[in-house]
Length: 128
Image 1: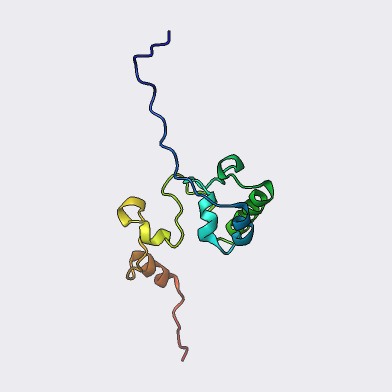
Image 2: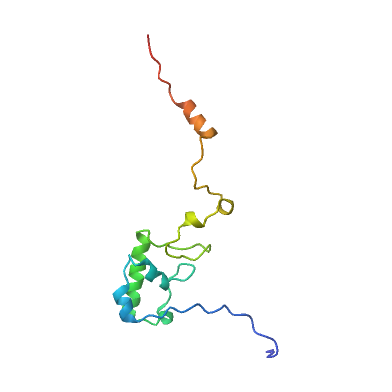
Protein backbone atom coordinates (compact mmCIF):
# COMPACT_ATOMS: atom_id res chain seq x y z
CA UNK A 1 0.00 0.00 0.00
CA UNK A 2 1.12 3.49 -0.77
CA UNK A 3 0.99 5.70 2.29
CA UNK A 4 1.22 9.36 1.28
CA UNK A 5 1.37 10.56 4.88
CA UNK A 6 4.83 9.06 5.49
CA UNK A 7 7.86 10.91 4.15
CA UNK A 8 9.79 9.32 1.32
CA UNK A 9 13.31 7.94 1.71
CA UNK A 10 15.89 10.73 1.85
CA UNK A 11 17.54 11.43 -1.48
CA UNK A 12 21.16 12.20 -2.05
CA UNK A 13 21.79 15.94 -2.17
CA UNK A 14 22.30 17.21 -5.71
CA UNK A 15 25.88 17.80 -6.82
CA UNK A 16 26.85 21.38 -7.45
CA UNK A 17 26.61 21.75 -11.20
CA UNK A 18 29.58 22.90 -13.24
CA UNK A 19 28.29 25.22 -15.93
CA UNK A 20 30.31 25.37 -19.15
CA UNK A 21 29.73 25.67 -22.86
CA UNK A 22 30.83 23.38 -25.63
CA UNK A 23 33.07 26.06 -27.12
CA UNK A 24 34.80 26.60 -23.81
CA UNK A 25 35.38 22.86 -23.38
CA UNK A 26 36.84 22.49 -26.87
CA UNK A 27 39.16 25.43 -26.18
CA UNK A 28 40.26 24.61 -22.61
CA UNK A 29 40.27 20.79 -22.49
CA UNK A 30 43.87 19.64 -22.38
CA UNK A 31 45.51 16.87 -20.36
CA UNK A 32 47.78 19.46 -18.68
CA UNK A 33 44.78 21.52 -17.51
CA UNK A 34 43.97 19.22 -14.61
CA UNK A 35 42.07 21.87 -12.67
CA UNK A 36 39.55 22.24 -15.53
CA UNK A 37 39.28 18.49 -16.20
CA UNK A 38 38.62 17.72 -12.53
CA UNK A 39 35.24 19.46 -12.92
CA UNK A 40 34.16 16.53 -15.13
CA UNK A 41 34.91 13.89 -12.46
CA UNK A 42 32.74 12.69 -9.59
CA UNK A 43 34.11 12.38 -6.07
CA UNK A 44 34.88 8.73 -6.81
CA UNK A 45 36.91 9.64 -9.91
CA UNK A 46 34.31 8.61 -12.51
CA UNK A 47 33.82 10.72 -15.65
CA UNK A 48 30.46 12.52 -15.54
CA UNK A 49 28.03 11.58 -18.32
CA UNK A 50 27.17 13.87 -21.17
CA UNK A 51 23.53 14.12 -20.11
CA UNK A 52 24.67 15.84 -16.92
CA UNK A 53 27.41 18.03 -18.37
CA UNK A 54 25.16 19.29 -21.21
CA UNK A 55 28.02 19.51 -23.72
CA UNK A 56 28.20 18.15 -27.25
CA UNK A 57 29.28 14.60 -28.05
CA UNK A 58 32.47 15.89 -29.67
CA UNK A 59 33.38 17.88 -26.55
CA UNK A 60 32.54 14.96 -24.26
CA UNK A 61 34.80 12.64 -26.27
CA UNK A 62 37.61 15.19 -26.04
CA UNK A 63 37.15 15.56 -22.27
CA UNK A 64 37.18 11.78 -21.80
CA UNK A 65 40.29 11.38 -23.96
CA UNK A 66 42.16 14.16 -22.12
CA UNK A 67 41.20 12.77 -18.69
CA UNK A 68 42.44 9.32 -19.71
CA UNK A 69 45.71 10.82 -20.99
CA UNK A 70 46.19 12.75 -17.75
CA UNK A 71 45.55 9.56 -15.76
CA UNK A 72 48.07 7.62 -17.85
CA UNK A 73 50.72 10.30 -17.23
CA UNK A 74 49.99 10.33 -13.51
CA UNK A 75 48.53 13.84 -13.38
CA UNK A 76 45.11 12.62 -12.22
CA UNK A 77 44.12 9.58 -10.15
CA UNK A 78 42.28 6.64 -11.68
CA UNK A 79 40.12 6.46 -8.57
CA UNK A 80 40.01 7.96 -5.11
CA UNK A 81 39.08 4.53 -3.70
CA UNK A 82 36.35 6.07 -1.56
CA UNK A 83 38.75 8.03 0.66
CA UNK A 84 38.62 11.68 -0.29
CA UNK A 85 37.64 13.47 -3.51
CA UNK A 86 40.38 14.50 -5.90
CA UNK A 87 41.30 18.15 -5.62
CA UNK A 88 44.00 19.68 -7.76
CA UNK A 89 47.07 20.85 -5.87
CA UNK A 90 46.69 18.56 -2.86
CA UNK A 91 49.04 15.64 -2.39
CA UNK A 92 48.50 12.43 -0.45
CA UNK A 93 51.48 13.17 1.79
CA UNK A 94 49.88 16.40 2.98
CA UNK A 95 46.55 14.74 3.79
CA UNK A 96 47.69 11.39 5.13
CA UNK A 97 48.22 11.25 8.83
CA UNK A 98 50.47 8.71 10.45
CA UNK A 99 47.68 7.42 12.72
CA UNK A 100 45.15 6.98 9.90
CA UNK A 101 47.28 5.19 7.32
CA UNK A 102 50.28 3.95 9.28
CA UNK A 103 52.73 5.68 6.96
CA UNK A 104 55.59 7.81 8.11
CA UNK A 105 56.80 10.22 5.46
CA UNK A 106 59.70 11.43 7.58
CA UNK A 107 62.98 9.58 7.33
CA UNK A 108 63.76 7.61 10.46
CA UNK A 109 67.09 7.08 12.17
CA UNK A 110 68.94 3.79 11.70
CA UNK A 111 66.90 1.07 13.34
CA UNK A 112 67.40 -2.64 13.98
CA UNK A 113 66.83 -3.48 10.27
CA UNK A 114 69.80 -1.31 9.29
CA UNK A 115 72.01 -2.97 11.92
CA UNK A 116 71.21 -6.42 10.48
CA UNK A 117 72.06 -5.21 6.97
CA UNK A 118 75.41 -3.90 8.21
CA UNK A 119 76.20 -7.22 9.96
CA UNK A 120 75.76 -9.12 6.66
CA UNK A 121 78.26 -6.90 4.86
CA UNK A 122 81.73 -8.39 4.34
CA UNK A 123 84.32 -6.41 6.28
CA UNK A 124 87.52 -5.27 4.58
CA UNK A 125 90.35 -7.49 5.88
CA UNK A 126 93.95 -6.59 5.22
CA UNK A 127 96.27 -9.55 4.66
CA UNK A 128 99.77 -9.28 6.02
